Image 1 (cartoon, rainbow, N blue to C red):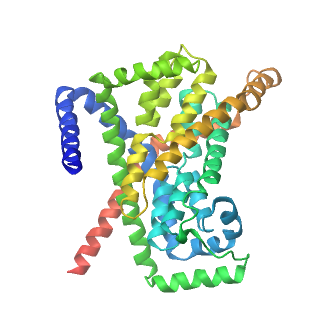
Image 2 (cartoon, rainbow, N blue to C red):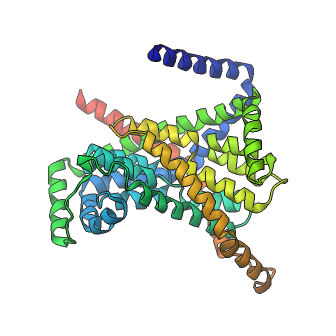
Image 3 (cartoon, helix red, strand yellow):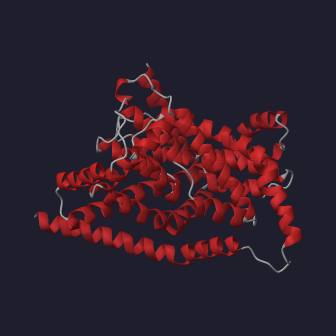
Length: 402
C-alpha cells in the first residue's frame, strides 16, 4: 500500500509540473533561463576547479596524508577521521554541494564508516564566501560589512552543528576508531601506499577527474534549473501564497514582518531568489532580514538538498541526518545573528560612518565586485571550454576502446 501511494504521489507531482509548464510557458522559460544563467556563469566555473583538484588529491593520497595528521584534532571535536578536515575546508571554500560529494567519495574509498560519513556531511556542506560576500552582501544588500556578520553566523553555526552531530550514532560499533598520535612519517607512508594502490597513470587519473566532475556539475545544473522553474510555478498557481499565510502567523508571533513570509518560502526552495526577495522587502527591519537570510543559508534550500540526496544515493549514507542538521544549523545561525548583530554590525557600522571619509570605499567591496564581474564576463567561456574538453576526452576514450 505504501509503495502504491508513493507511485501515486510521484505521478501526480510530475503531472502537476508538466501541466503548469504548459499553462505558464513564458514564465517557465524565464525561470529556466535564470537558473541556467546562475549555473553557466557562477556555479560551474567556481566549482569545477575544486572538484577536479579534490579528485586528484584523493587519488594521489594527499587526503589520506592530511587525514592522519589531523586525526588528533577532528576525532575529539567531531568524532570523524582526520580526512574530514579536508572535506570541511573544501566544503567551505567551494560551497555546496562539495561537502556531500567529497564525503560520498571518501565513503566509497572506505575511509569513512557510514555513521562517520553522516556526521561529516552534516556540517561540511556550507555556502562559499563568494556567495555570502559577493552575491548576498554586495549584490542584494549593497553592504559588504554585512557579509562579515552573515559569514560568522553561517560558519560558526556549522561548527556548532559538527559538535552536536558528533553524538549521532555514538553507540554504533563502526563509529569507533583507534586514537593515533601525530606522525608525519606514518602519514607519508599512507600517502605513498594510496597512490600505489590506485595504480592509474597520471593521464588516466586526470581524465577521470575531469569527466567525473563535469558529470556531477551537469547534474547540479539540472537541479538548479528545475527548482528555479518549480519555485516560480508554485507561486503562479497560488501554492506559495497559501503556505505563506501559515508562516505569517508564526513570523508575527516571533515579532517579524508578515511580508517576509513569501520570500522565506521562496528561500526554502532556492536560496538565491529567496535572499534577493528578502533584501527587497521594505516592511521589515534589517535585523529581521539578516535572521531570515541566515536561516535559509543554513537550510541550504530544497534545491541543494535534492542535489545532496542525489549524490548520497550512490552510497549507503542516509539523508535524514543531513536534513536534521540543516534545521539545526538554521536555528544556530539565526540565534547567532540575533546575538552578534549589535557587536559585529551595528557598532562597527556606526564607527565607520564617523571614522571613514565619505569618499572611502571598502576594499572588500571592490574585491568581491571584481570577482563577480569576472565570473559574469568569463564564466560562460570557461564553462563552454570545459564541456568541450570533457566531450573530447569521452570521444577519445570511445575510439581507443574500439
